[in-house]
Figure (cartoon, rainbow, N blue to C red):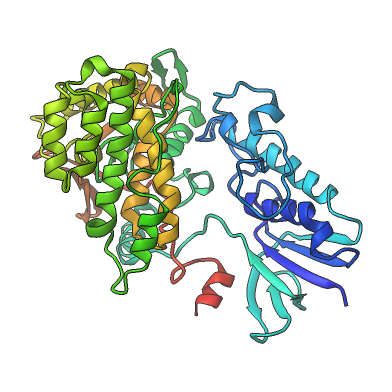
Length: 506
């Protein structure tokens, strides 16, 4: 009987599994037959997120040089290295280009075909373009994977789930808003992958409340403006007349920070320094467990600060008041945030050169504007300043912090579920849109197509409409017949819409 492997999910992760099987095939089972069943309603390689059948206006959020599906000598693994081109090399593009998602989809499709071609003859790949419904079978022994389009199951010695982004049933708040919309003839679009959302109910010229200011919002902004025939002429937006008016807000009330538009010259900070494997081991060894805010965040905060000041003192010593050696010893010895803050205040004269993570996280905290129009101008100034800073190497400590964020993210994965706050904070600082997208946002604001609501945006369903307010502009409110939740569904097994995962969870 031939061995059988079922991989549920044929996107980048499933493709990566195939590539590793091909690379290790000689050692895994020389000469043995193997059937690999890929189960995914979307095309193998790109899968759902990177499928080539989506709007050409939607970009990747990573530079082309930062994307690859291949291994090199930097990868820690037991198997052999099988190098291949990064996206920019494969596509013949500049490394710092932000390309359309359809280009990435074509790259992944090519990588999938290359992985299949590299498999030995006795290994056969079967793609099933449908959904897996459930898995049954004994704890020890072959499993049965039931598919949506066939009466008999696939029999498997091993099942691998490479599911990626998943839809979720609405939580209590979203369910109530959806019910209110149905009862009153309104439009409510719950959290979703924006490229899959039906935006046709959002009518030209009508106000639309948008809750969420991250990458899902950027996609929504593009599809409802350029996607409806508008165009940008430099820093000016020329409407088509088919756009709705977007009133956007969020918890922070500001868009994610722009991608940094320069490279770090010289060596990066020596990380990890205060949050490395030993600190993670100590946290995991605590019999009583740990609390993220109390036990983990202080280590993360100190690590990010170390990266920032290492770069500031090394690259811009004229903006500091101490030698690096003196500062580093005092920083390492500082036992709490207040002590570190006092040290920084004494050693770094300009507040703009100090790392204030709380202020970065909530830039509108405590701010009040006298009118809605005053806030529009104020937030445009904020975005313009962010764009300027994120493209000015004089503020290269920002890029050092970006590297530290990546280092920290890798360590935190060992701690398991630490709650949603960290991922949101990381994305806001390190995974924001390319600079051109924020320049488009500014043009849309000046054209009146995009309006800012403020921080801690509240939405109430009352009087037959949705009503949005924010303490940033006291007394201001906007009413609309449409509400869009511009964010991805929160990862959840309990409320997953994927039938296989929900069945396993139950």
